[in-house]
Length: 106
Image (tube, rainbow, N blue to C red; front, top):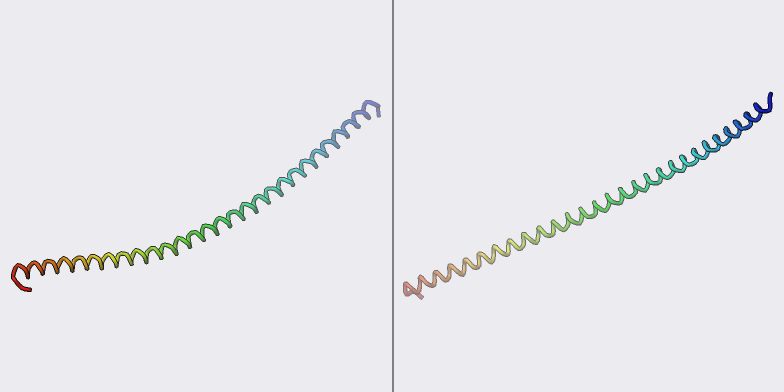
């Protein structure tokens, strides 16, 4: 073999080795990225579960408070009805008193 051919073969071997090293480095980086993606997916799942749990807690609190508020509203409505009936009774008594006064009945 001629010296030129040997020199070309050596250079090609060096290029081949560099390409192989670059390939290995790229595979390493890809593996690192895959690991980071998996970690991000796990973190994302944890965040989603945490948010769902928080939402469930808030919905429970709202539901409980709604029931409590509904009871209060019902109680206030009952009280308002009683007050209205008492006012109506007072009004009727006043009307009755006017009629009695008009008719001269004590």
